[in-house]
Length: 417
Image (cartoon, rainbow, N blue to C red; front, side):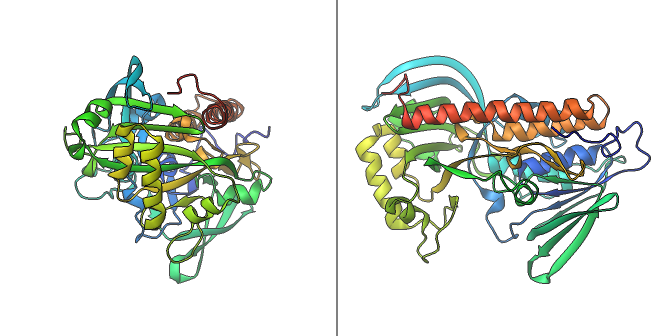
């Protein structure tokens, strides 16, 4: 494993001036990494490929906030926003909707849109109205810039710097140079494809239907099954789960929260059924995800009917009550190492290793990697120890996710109902 040169990422104690970082990818991993660098006084430019007109900020997906995520926000969130809804119980339903296994287990649930807005507020003071107030910039904070509609085309080492060329919306080609470039651009990472082309993203044989419905709209039976509980149902080739998350603008008020659900279903890679799911009404076939606004109404109505046929009644009610679900293909991908181009280009988060969602650890990985980078930069870790720790976490959790997913979808789950 190639390690980062000490001269490339010096500790802050020996740095003579702030470093310039370009982060490719402006989702949670990119923002967490950017906030760490900003707080250490470095200059940070984030290039995000989504245009401002997308629903990038309002993806209402649920997130299980694990230890590293909670630790990151405790250390770096200056807005002091309350982020989570507490689940007090983990339990399983049978096909008729009866409870047959239960254990006390406190877990903390949040939402993608809330984390994104709080992170943006901390990074560059931008957040949608109602989520939080932007904190004051501190004197030692570095300069930051967040640019949307910026699709990276190439990276190349030039002298002591790395040059990044990207397409800047309708304004043509732009170029910037940095001391370090960090790829946080997800499981379909452009940077990983450039520096580690053998690390290809592959379909795992199943997908996740995902959606939310209002807590206020739940029937008494659904309320009893889901509110402040982490609820599961397993059957042959099928898993579905649900938990409460914050509602509009991150509200945690009872009755105003959302019930987030995820339903895993198997589909052959080249099947007509999968092709129908991934093809929108305009005839465009999407590759890895089907956005909520693009899913064919006829396809969704068919899936709703299927829910009545195979799910416990409480879960079927959630599915029927969801107007705009989205679809996520479950995939595997892992880079061979963390650092490239003589330590000038790093891969972190999902760009390094994409986890299956059974681990609920993608956001945790982003926080883990950002916090470890902070420890490297302040001199508490050497470069070799840092890279080993980042890669070790990625490999262990990814392997765990593959095992969990394969057991759930292609084996026998011990708590099948």
